[in-house]
Image 1: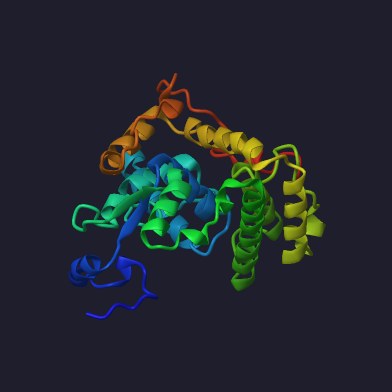
Image 2: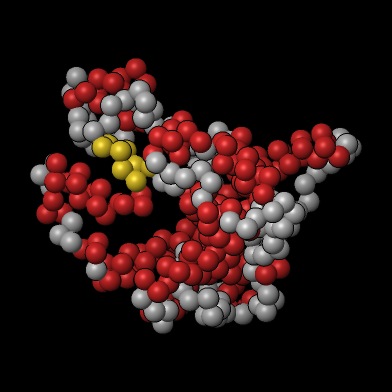
Length: 305
């Protein structure tokens, strides 16, 4: 069998061909902490506008409708009337527990790590080290040249993330009429800059409603990159990202977090993650969930509208 080197993912091949392909290739896969992955998927696909947002929201709303009918005996005419795409982190977490959506589905159910003898099982948390190991095995170690360890690389990477996020939200807004106004979509994108540790918390979205409606991709990108350069080093901004990660799970009931932990048990066991991380569970009690930006969008637009 001849291999198309452009098709680097086994998922692109029929399932019955994957073993043969894997037997002829140096194979590797990467996993990610299930809690971090859930948080990232929510921020990138639901908190801000993305091409997949409408599709995912539609399914979550259907699920919410079914639960409403079952638990509260709502009438058959019940329709989700939440504002815009304001799906909370708690609602997304519950959706992820039972979803087949690849953005939320456990890695162990997507990549067949038990059926294919991968040469390397890497983790996103050690991407630098694991990537170097893989490239060394492939005699391509020169590709990285220690760049991932320096602040210059991280600054360039973060600038690229800002550019990509801005381009993405504009492409979605341009493609079709969304439930969300351009101003709110851009405010949420800027908030994702905060959440991902790209821009310091105290640097607010700098445009008025009228200015945002007329803003271009280049203008928002320019403002975002300038704000990033005023926000300290990547290491300093990392603590801010961690704060938001913990805050997201603080907005979820303990019962639902426990359900999520049980749903990702296979990923935790296969890839060496903790299904009950202390930073999520420490001090939690049922009924102590917080009202914050991940549960109430009034905190996102506070002081801007």
